[in-house]
Image (cartoon, rainbow, N blue to C red):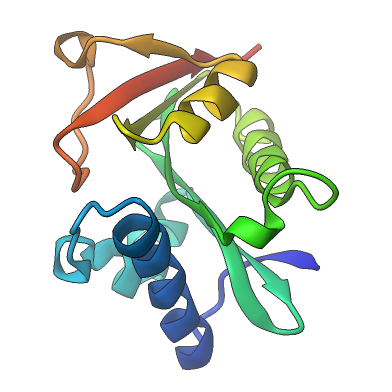
Length: 162
């Protein structure tokens, strides 16, 4: 298993779309269309050209996880596109924790001081992960930044970095 920065690759992009579709629409039954997520088809310009980053986890050169960091300004980043297939969650692999650690180290090294994210209301497992990792839920009305997220019934979380 390796976590690498995304590089344009049609096979990896197709596998990433499959991963996102599986997690959002098959597993979580959210009915979110890929047409609402055009950032996935413009990773370099949307994330990487703007001081952000997008990582994929590969097992035998197959995409099995992802996470992205989208800068909003010099202080705040959004955690996006955080997905793993179920067989890579929890012990012994803990791919989510590995991806999150990669994200966090990048954010800290780039001197960002706050992470914001949205996660579907019915994704209890995700809520547990974020809360265990120091995120606190905030009211949508208190969100002082704007960014697109496709699931309108989402919880908003934030975490201040040291």
